[in-house]
Length: 116
Image (cartoon, rainbow, N blue to C red; front, side, top):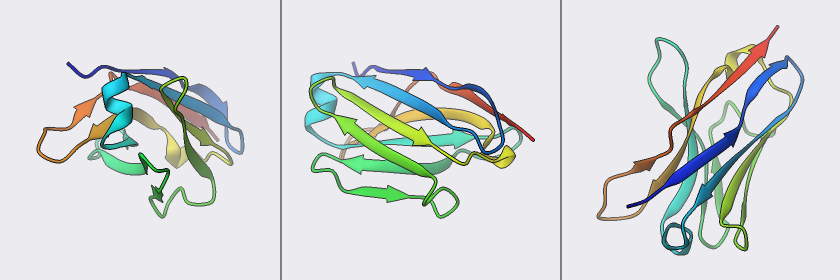
C-alpha cells in the first residue's frame, strides 16, 4: 500500500513563503511521478506541480516562477517551496503519486491559508 505523508502548510500573509513536504516509500520514489495538487473551497482539485524520477518538472501556469518542486532521494521526500504567496493560493494541498497502470495515490492533504 502506498503511503504519502504530508507536512507543512499553515497560515501566512500574502507575499510570504511556506514549504510543504511529502514523505514517500522506497517503491514510490523509484518509479512514477510525484506531484502536488490543490483544492480550494467550492472548486475542483487542480494540478500544481510534479517531478519525475529523473528530475523533470512541470508547473501550472498560475504558480510558475513562484513555486519550486524538488525531491530528496536520500530522505524519500518531495518538497514544494511556495514563495510570493497570494490569497488565491489558499487551498488544501495534496501529495500525489502517479504510475502507469495503477490508480493515483493521494496524501491526506494539508491546509494552506494566505491572508490578504
